[in-house]
Length: 237
Image 1 (cartoon, rainbow, N blue to C red):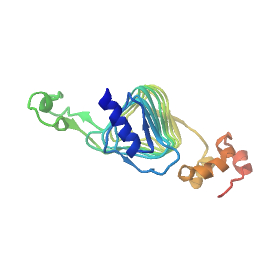
Image 2: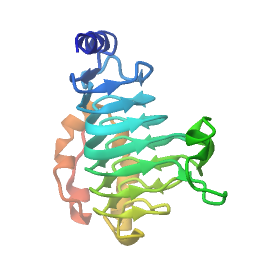
Image 3: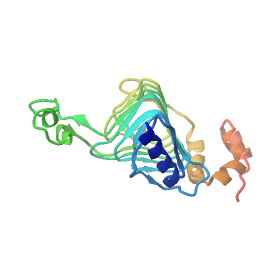
Image 4: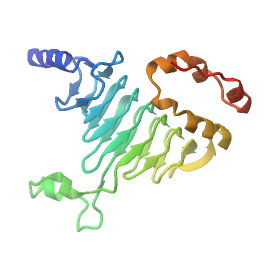
């Protein structure tokens, strides 16, 4: 226990924008791309072996392992949430939110072989990655909300602004600003009409500084419709 406390002190000293509690584990090799940020990444009761995190991320009671890249202000909430990369990358971009008991993997068992079991790992004592197959990286674009008990399969890309309903199994790419749910998940509607979607795409608000978001807080507290976007007056720094 004393060693664990010492390790945590070292993390707090050298990873000043990553805050962990004593029940958390974090890889020393994680790259923090927001060292001077006033909005630290907080990791609470989690096991994390991330690759890159950005400012303001919040990871609570979740397992994140492998080549995982988090944008700004990403929220990953457990318990039961597992995000694991073995062969490719899992990229979760800014302002995305992931609920409890969500599973995101970049690999599957190889079912075209004689056995789908972990033969290389269990019997041949070789790297278990040889037992796995993969497609391309999993990409979750900005401002995606993934509901609890959802499974995201390897190679899937979820478009910006989409909502994934609780209990979904996402087997294929999701268009931007879609509302999808089911097993397999299907698009049931769009969050906004085309005019509002274009308005948001032109804004690119997910790239704004924290200061610009703050002075335009009225935008983030408005229910968007065609009348609202005409009345909203934005301020620049």
